[in-house]
Image 1 (cartoon, helix red, strand yellow):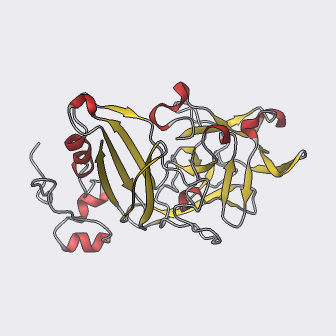
Image 2 (cartoon, helix red, strand yellow):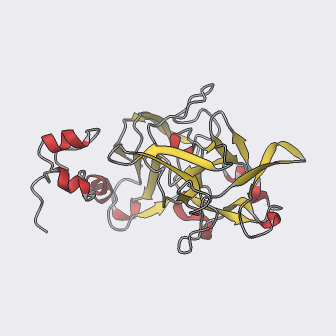
Image 3 (cartoon, rainbow, N blue to C red):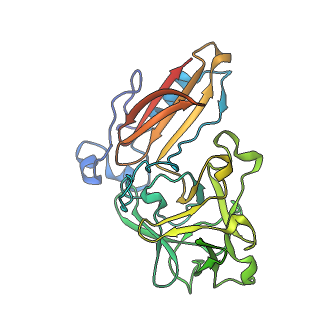
Length: 305
């Protein structure tokens, strides 16, 4: 299609417009507000896709890759600090799916248990308008997992939850829906395992949450009111803890075996959606590949044998 007058292209990816600019600033440099108002993305997707198409050629295959800071300091919250990092949560919006990912200490994994006994998140949308949403009380019929919804108990699907200690383990709790139609024994917040063992991310990368059997280990959590983390250790034998997440984490990775395409043996694409830099260590199994940092709102590609 013909490009709009504010689009720019060029090899390899062209100049970048829009990053960290307000709506008024974008309008002032010639990107009409009317496009922003209807949701036209200022930063075209080909800036991201270019990292895939240039380095991950036909014949490559996805392999297991996952960002994990569950064992040490959180990526966005250093040890000893309680304030979540990563910048404002832009996924604290109605209709976003709730999942579990390795804990990163970000605002996308920060939950407030409010006075109405709802689990609430705060953030803003892409135009900077403040947002807030709560954990729903029923699964979305098409996606099959719990979502974020309006924090209104009488008119919408927001859940009211009781926090019940697990008697045999003082550090664990069960989160039980109190305003549902099913008995309490079948109304616990549980992890809903991914099919096919989770694919390239593995079982800890993006499993849904739902309501179900309180007797199962999937229904056991830890909740730190100071940091806002809702944490599960159910996958500790296959990698480590996971945290309740709005949508997906800020720091993500995709790993590919590119040897069949005639290129370097492996390619890793790292994406940081956060408003803060992220330090990381890249490992291939037990082998250290590099130690580096990725700036906010950026993407990096690493190719190695």
